[in-house]
Image (cartoon, rainbow, N blue to C red; front, side, top):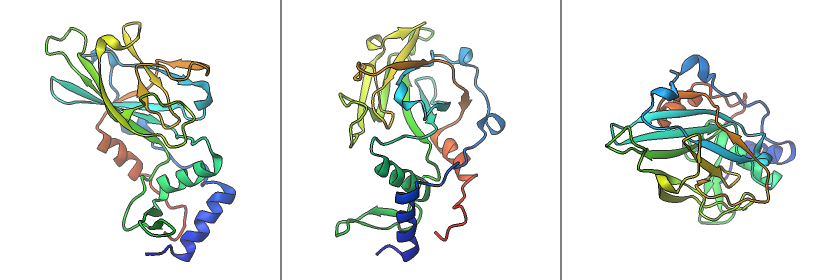
Amino acid sequence: MLLAPHHVLLLLAVLVLGPPLHCPSPDFGRSCARVDPAALPFPLPVFRIPLVDDDCPILAVFVALEGPSAAELHVVTADEDHPLPIVDQLYDAQRWFGLVEPSGTFPFIRRARGRSGYRRIADVETLIVELDPAWPGPPAAIRFPGTYSGDQRWDVLLARHHSAEIPWDQFDLEDGRPVLYVNTWNHLFSNDPNNGCLDHRLVADYPVYQGSRADVQRHFDAIWTNFGLDL
């Protein structure tokens, strides 16, 4: 299925002008239940993030307790910026609109069938804290389901999503909280820093809300707009 003419024009416009500005974001503070970090059975992480990512701040962290053995954390950042500006423009448009999907034949993309966009340019990355049944002791580990950086660095052009489970005692601690290093432009995590040549900032204070990844997506779906385009 080939791209419709108006889809081609939109992609060309995105390449020339960039994606639509001021893509709306939910007002989490008005619509979400706040979580008191002191009431959680584990310490929330702190993040060490390269200063080059200052345009993509952490908007919120959502917490979903999965019974007594684990807690899911969903880290929402304003965007994720690819190192190549033209690729980043197309990437943002695709994440918002979902215009195309991969194809096995030339030109190797085709018009998306049904919904394929995220209805957001915000990034959502998930990690799972494995709790120790003997709580209030420290957690056993942190699991990264497709959100582990491995040895990749910030400006990797094709960032691969690895998975890993890291024991708690292998994390650096900041006031008793595990330090997560954001090692790639698309916000993949590690317990090790891969970008020693870059200046970093420590992010320890961020809004915390109750909710699953599906809940996060529903908040973005609720404000979806196609900016008046015929999609």
